[in-house]
Picture 1: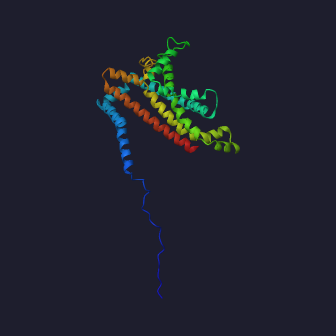
Picture 2: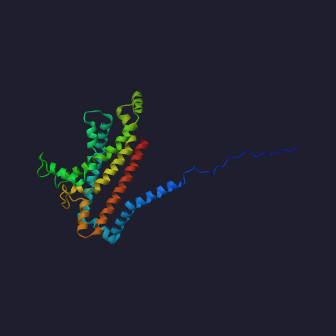
Picture 3: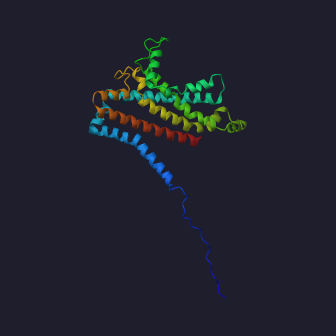
Length: 282
């Protein structure tokens, strides 16, 4: 009698990859190519040109431009004002979005439309509006022209919709049943907000705050009539760039622009990491 040894079957090896994960259909490939070309023409090439112009004078000229006392003062004022505006927008914008979604009152639709006016209004018109209301001939007796308060108010005006419009859709999609379940289990309103609502809102808040900050540090039109452009006091980075260009110093203007770009990128990445951490801890 002959014994036949049969090896137990081993685990089957699968080498197949999910279809569509690494391969694109012809239509998708064409779409991706068009998107990359369009993105390169509108974003990558202009940014590369700015970086090239900033580097044209060498590292020494780049560093001297940014460390110049007047330029540094303009950059510091711009970043500090934009940071303060971002904090205010993160709080007030969330409150406004909450009111528009959760509350019902007379004139709600009108307020919802008015929120978008800073998006549609040309920024130079926004500056003229603020100048008419809070200028030397102010009907309310308040003159904030050529002051840091005026810069802050102008930046608040043009960045108002960002947080509101990013938080509002998230609030609409939140499931109210989850909040009711938490309340039925004895959770306080503060605990419900901190553990359930806030983790869902933080990504939207940080996204809107990032957009608002990037807009604030690059704002020009609304500040031309309000800031006064006084060196060391109310001169912002965008107006400093204009001075460099008018003085035929394109390398200096590009150096300031590159630094603003770096600040915006670092801020966006930092806020994104913060939102992920808060959402995970929630």
